[in-house]
Amino acid sequence: MPIHGSLFQDYQETTGQDPFVLQNKKLLKINMQYGPVNCKTGSMVAYQGDVRFENTGSGGLNKMLKKAVTGEGVNVMQCTGTGELFVADMASEIQVFYIENDTVSCNGASVLAFSGSIEWDIQRIGGGMAGAMAGGLYNVTLRGTGYVALTTKGDPVVLDVSGPPTFADPNAVVFWTSGVQMNVKTDSGGLKSMVRGGTGEMFQLGFSGQGYVMVQPAENVVTTGAQSSGGGGLLGGIMGQ
Image 1: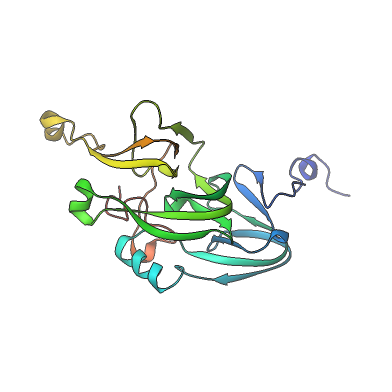
Image 2: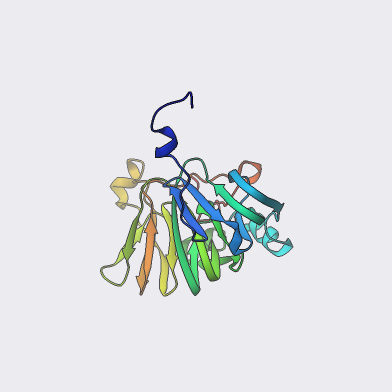
C-alpha cells in the first residue's frame, strides 16, 4: 500500500453489533439487520449494503398541523434494508440510550434517530406564564421500546431531580424521563436588573419528581419557518434567542 501511517487503524469501523453503536462521539453506526429505523432527514453520511430512505416528513397530517402551530417537531426519514448506516448532525455529540415500554420528553432539535418500534408525537407539556403568552410549551415525546440517539452541543450533564430543586434554561434542556414533573419559573432579576437590560434568564424550567433531566452546555438557537430543518426547540419557537 503506497499510503502509510496509523490512519487506517485509528479510524477503522467499529465492530460493535448492537442496533445503535457509537463509531465515535459524533458519528452513529446503525446495524440495519434489526429492522427499520427513523432518522432525522438528511442525517445520513454513509452506508454499506442496501439501505433505502423514505421521507416521512412531519409524520402525517396531524403532526404536520401541530408543528405548524407550535414550531416543535422533527422531520424524519424511515430507513430500511441491510448493512450499516452512519448518521450524524453537524458534528454534534451523540448520546445513545435504550427505553423499555417507557416515554421520554425531548427537544425536537436534538432527535437524531430512534428505533422503528418507537412512536413519536408532539405534546403540550406546560402552561403558566408561557401558556398565557402562546398556549403552553411543547416537546417531542418518544414512547415504546427501542433505541434512541439524541445530539448535544458538547458533553451534557444528567441531573437527578429527586433531590434539591432543579432548574434549567429551556433551550439547554435535551430531554427528561417519565416520572419527572416540569413547571415554568419566571425570574426577572428584580427592578434594578430589568432597568439594566435584564439577566437573559427570565424563563426557567423547574423539575421535580422521580427521574432525570439531561442538560447540554449550550442553548439551541431556535429558527422558524423555512429556516428550520428539525424541531423548533422546547418552547415551540416563541423564545428564540
